[in-house]
Image (cartoon, rainbow, N blue to C red; front, side, top):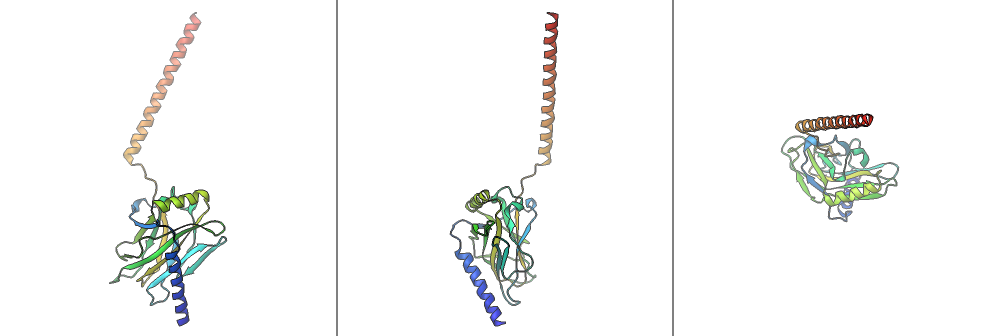
Length: 238
């Protein structure tokens, strides 16, 4: 048991070190406040469970090696990479990563996000994009919200947009490290902002405009027909 515990701790440390030192960019992932009513249906990405029953640490992730997903760390349930094209997003800046905290009620300390990384892999398993959580470490109240939403800042979104434009088949993978957890699993999901839906008043105005345009077109056609008929009659009289 001690060997297993030590191995798990070593693995989590390696994952965290790789996450915190792997980013060479000042831009990255930030906490955002989305309009929940305008989110796309979430797609599961990653679920983390403490390494042991008494552990207060969750760390793990999933990436892609060109032929299949590679899962590592203290994960629970299904996790997989997701093709960016399957998210239904118009732009990379619309991408959101939702974190659902699943802790039992009670007097619990805030959960600390030591960091997480979003990466995109091509069909050969080569990483074409990476962004890390630049606000880490961050403490989150496990009972203040069912979901916390994170997104890319403008620079990171531009990099992902360029990467997807160059290769639309890119797959997104995620790795994360959380502390002060005692329940779980904590779930990460992909979602995004949807295009705004026209309000009913706007739709009525639009429909009225179409009717007006159609009426004007009919009047122009009648006037043109009458003009042609008059010209033909004048020619016949001559």
